[in-house]
Image 1 (cartoon, rainbow, N blue to C red):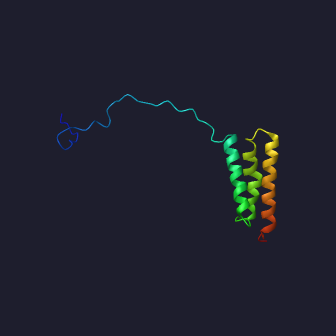
Image 2: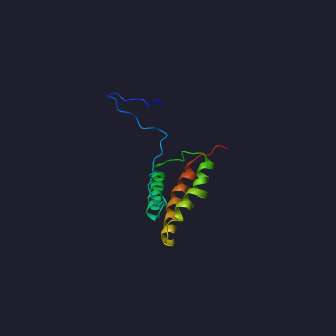
Image 3: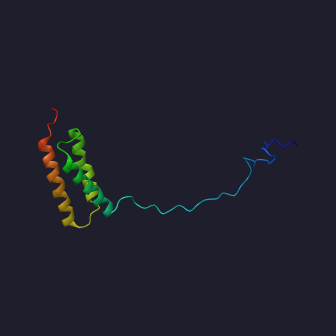
Length: 107
């Protein structure tokens, strides 16, 4: 039977694409959750810093409401110290109230 495998330049043959080979698998690395207390502090600090630099909200009202109902509570649940949570809430509330007062929402 003829060998139809393509020859490389120089005469060497390619491996058979359908030949049986042992399956080599790497052990799956242990998946680590992407958020922890330090990461939550980092993101909360970025929010406070960025909001303090704004004069008005750059987003529509429904997007700002998502910050209050989803993003902030999601980050705050990673902070274990209740006093620290209250401190972050106060900082965020201060900046958000200031931006709410300065923003003219479309009717």
